[in-house]
Length: 630
Ligand code: PLP
Image (cartoon, rainbow, N blue to C red; front, side):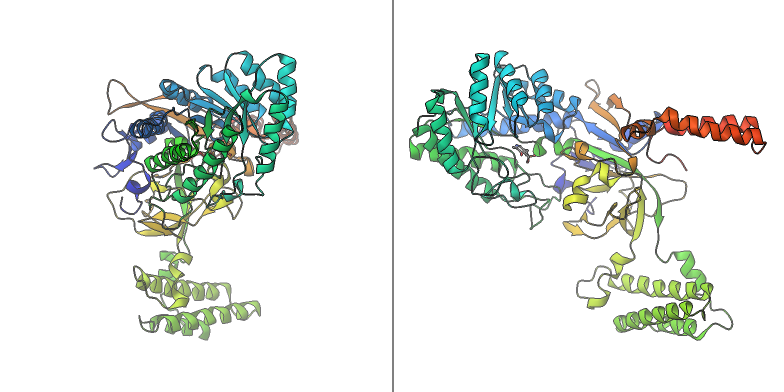
């Protein structure tokens, strides 16, 4: 387990048991324990098929509780004069079961929801019925969006429309007037404090959303002219997701709190101070070290700094302390789901068998082959860089001879296998050493095995592809054995970008991942963890793989060592993804059937075989898009 830093990134939810299996502590430690291999067995017994998303709804509940209690504790300790009203931004994971679970766990705290589009607002209006909990509407809004928000006000809900651009304000006031309802208005401030990390573009003068200081002043004027300043209820800002440094949080809160204080003094009775999202999670488990997938603070530190800084500015400015709102999505959902995939093979450069075969000298070998043998045989730790140069040149020479037609395919194969033998030898010598000849330093990574895993990176971890974001990848079993293979991971899309070659390993990040040697006939399962935020819903249809099978796991109330699967949500069938790109499965079937009937008529296929081929075509169409058994 020390290879995979579970204790670093797992936030107490994951560890390894005496069987060498990854286990989940869905309510934190100590508490109930679920052996992930038991879940894998269950998936197999039910014939659900891999890859499979596994959601631990109890983890979700634990995170909702954790953030609410962290704010509650800081507010009590600092005798802060108002409350915390968190909202979950549904864009981070819109799954109904996820949203329902969050609302249920958050009910004691009046935890609300945030919507960024009409679709999301339709969901939120349906789901968030607590009159004390907030509904925050972010994003650009058209008339329908604004009318929906006002419908929420008619229902007596605390629906706050956050003004992202100035023209939304008169539009909202006009519609509210027309509908005879008091709007609740939020103003989004474009802070100059910029986030650090991958999502830093969300703030600063050129950010997409929010009002500049002159625009805020203009908004105050519009509200006063309409005699609606009492409707201004919230100040909002968001400086970027996954803020990697606590310094940025403090700076943003300070700047935001000053803006709040000044607006209050200008006569806007703002009650809520909304710090947006940004609370990061530590995907690497290193407490930063400069990795953008890590963070240099904890949830408690984040919460404490917000409460402290708002309080300090309010005291200094002599304004009332506002309720604090945060819109944490990533921190609430990231840990609760993982994807389990089977490794179904490997691509080995210079396999053991090929090298063994090439190592036996044959009579009458061409000179180039003999010379390559000599280079490999005379390699020593001292001359390894020189031997590598010589071998690379010899390999090139063999290639030129092959192109000229004076070297056969088999001899070229021997030269190449001998070259990989040398490279493997050098990589073995280099393993674990820090000071290495420059040219040979990366050879270990170059000859790493490529483990073929049954999943699509574009569907299940799009942020790795788009942003190089790291997700912990860990074997679900065999943790009692030391891993012996350096690997990279390739997915099943026909795209060379569909690979993972940056991993969390030990207490850092590496180009390869240590995994166990595959055993013939024995499945090998990998878990990709912390995929609960953004990944589920941003996944795309590359190669028409589509949505993955999914199960929802709960701790058994009567037996904390046991679990039950409450929900199985089948992934996409091929039929379904084909319809999405405008194919009519029945029409495709008819075409293939007609072609088969023709062959039967011609006597090329027996009628019985024709029928069974038709059935086969139809069953593949109705089946799962990912790889099944081979
Ligand atoms: N609120 C707003 C306005 C956002 O744009 C985002 C995401 O970028 C969030 C909340 C959620 O942020 P996070 O997932 O970092 O908590």
